[in-house]
Image 1 (cartoon, rainbow, N blue to C red):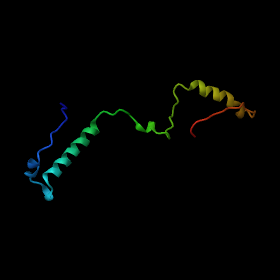
Image 2 (image 1 turned 180 degrees about the vertical axis):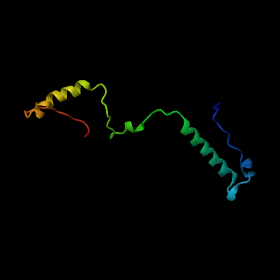
Image 3 (image 1 turned 120 degrees about the horizontal axis):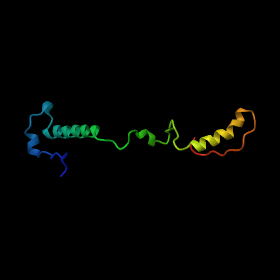
Image 4 (image 1 turned 90 degrees about the vertical axis):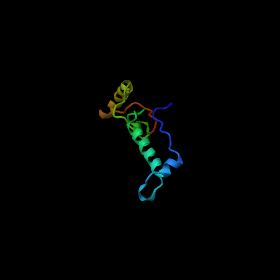
Length: 95
């Protein structure tokens, strides 16, 4: 059995509680259960450290394992800095 499971009180138990502002005991119990649920979820361990990296708009600051490709592009593009005509490069992907 799940140790985090809290059985819901019967309707009778909920109605017997003294509730402020005329709320029923069931409504207070549900609110308490929701508060407990969110408290548990806040402290639970996450799967992702940063879910933002899953967005298609995310641009990483480092490109691990792409050193060879970056060096190749730099070698081809250095001719532009020197004022020479560069070789043709075809680059594709999201912009």
